[in-house]
Length: 252
Image (cartoon, rainbow, N blue to C red; front, side):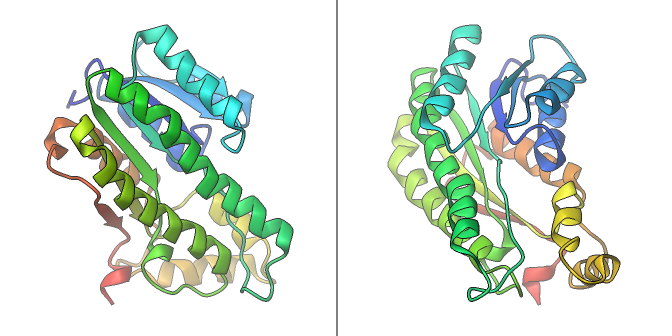
């Protein structure tokens, strides 16, 4: 399918995992993509490997307002406008509330929540001025159900869900649809980083797989498929939605 032919898109956290899969799927569907990541080399690697021409890589720290403003400005300058923003960049820690350091609290909230707000702050006006389009934020099933050892991560993803719904109402009359995706546990480098903190990382990984009724981790390409749908005209009536892709975990 080429549902995104001619669309101009930014994907933050695009240098690996879900972000890389989304950038790849968008390009396959005809979009031009700015692959944005705090890791400039990773962003460049992904952008260079995308199908089609005209893709860009951009080093961006989503917690830096000036950097996010410049990211959006570059897309508009290069392409004459912006149609799609995916606020995917995020981090997490495995800890209960008493076990969460203040430093980890601020890091998770800054990247996940502040980064999402800044992405919307600068992308929404650009999308509006380009004739309308789509913003997709990356929430999590941690916003919907209680997960062990994910206190501040759950708080951050819950905030993203609420931000999405509020922003959807604020901007739909401007032609900007705002939605979020709530993945289950996705097979990305993030899982390896989280499980590395446990005494038996492989056992921790198996527990993550077992808690999803379909018995496996979600593939990043499955999240990318949902992101492509939300960015397409097929989702014209999808506004303020939290699209769950979790193998049935929240159905229990």
